[in-house]
Structure formats: C-alpha cells, structure tokens
Length: 181
Image (tube, rainbow, N blue to C red; front, top):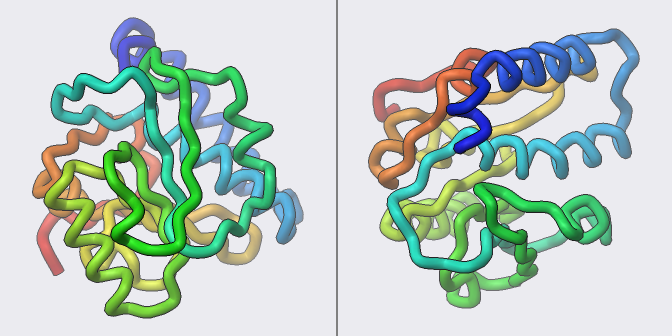
C-alpha cells in the first residue's frame, strides 16, 4: 500500500477510470469480464493492509477450478504486489491452500465456500469470489457483472474479523456491508 499512501489521488484517478470503463455500455463480454476479474484480483490486493507477515512473496491461490486458463500467469509474470513478487498457486482442495494472501474461490457448494471462508478468516486471508451471495455469507469481496457492469460488494465486517484493513478508495466504489448479515 506504499504507493497508495504516497499518492492517494493517483489511486482514486485509476479507480475512477476503471469504473468509467466498466460502466460503458457494451464494453464487456464474457472473455473481457474474465480478463477484468483477473486484473481486479491484483488491484483489490493493492488496497488491502494485512497484518505483518514475514513472507518473501505475495501469494494468490485459486481454490477449485481455474476459470482463467493461463491468463493469471501471463498477467502477473514479473509483477509485484506490496513490493513482493507474485506467486500463483492452483489447488483443488482446502487442505492444499496453506499460507496465502489472497484466496479466489470458485467452489460451487455453499458448505465448501463456508469452510474456505472460515479457514481464510482464521488465517488473515483476503477472500474473493464471483459466487452469488458470497459477501453476504462471510466472504470479503464479491465481484460480478450485471448488464456488462462490474459490481463489487465488500463485507467490511468479515475483513475486520480477518485482521484486514481495506483502503478507502476501494470501499468508495463498492457496496459495503458493515454489519455481519
């Protein structure tokens, strides 16, 4: 978050431009939405403060299916988040997650998502999903597209329970749940 603290106006400008793109009629279709989801993962992480960790890499883990193909590998190759190189992990079971900073969930089962959310909360992990009702059920960031417009829903209470702080620029463009549902 150091670049965000040094220049919050730049961050707000970036978010404003991204929102303008997302609100443009006809700007998104299936593949374009998937590409934006991939970009959003890293951008969301840029606005999150984690408790101090002694890791050399910033770890993003996808749990269950990988809807991105090799897009994440291409997008995040040689990139950094919070001044750390990015490591991508692809796992099929919760017991394979281990230490991670971001957990992107594609789990279909509500029970499996609940178990992953519980694990993430206990371990200070940012959870992101496109699953309907994800933020309402304790996930931190829910991203979806309606009529080709991105909608971001943030469960602020869940973030706080996980020990995470979300930057104001991200909160300002999202629907924010402040109390536990």
